[in-house]
Length: 175
Image 1 (cartoon, rainbow, N blue to C red):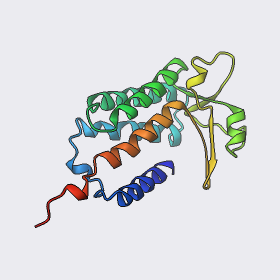
Image 2 (spheres, rainbow, N blue to C red):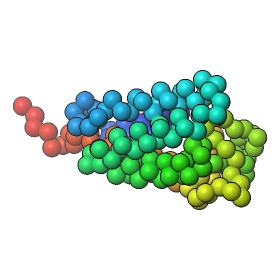
Image 3 (cartoon, rainbow, N blue to C red):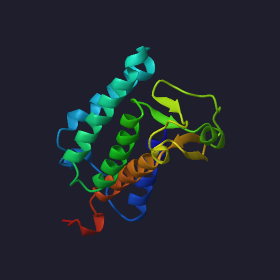
Image 4 (cartoon, one colour):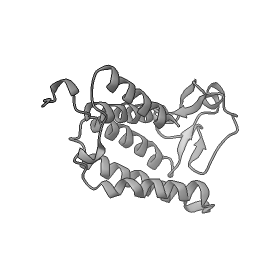
C-alpha cells in the first residue's frame, strides 16, 4: 500500500514540476530479473506455511535484492534504495532471517500489539541492531504500518527513482 502512496506522490510532483512520467523501460537497470526473486520468496514465506526454513528463505530474498541494488547503484535514486536494503538485510541476517518489530510501535501504528507474521519476530533483549528494526510507527491516511530506518531509505529512493528518472518536459524540443 505504501508503494502506491509513493508512486502517487511522485506522479503529482512530476505534474507540478512539469516532468514527464517516468518510463522504467528507458532506465538502464542491470539484472532486472533479480527483482522478482525476492518478491516470490517473500510470498512463499508469508503464504507457504514453510515452518522453520522461513528465516533462511527471507535471508536469501534480502541478499538477492541487495545484489540487484548494488548492481544498479548508478541509477538515479538507487543509492537510497541500496542503503535501505543493506540496512534491512543487516538486521534480518543478524536476527536469524526475521525482522524484529516493537510491540509498542505496532500499538502506535494502530495495529494489534500481538500481530506477528512469518517474516517478523518481536523485539527483545536478544535483538541484534534494534535501532534498525521496525520501530517507526506510521499511522496516517488509512496507512497503519511499522517500518524501519531502512524502509524509509527505500521509500525515499523509490520516490527519487520515479521522479529523477522522468525527463523534464521543459527541456524537450517541440517540433
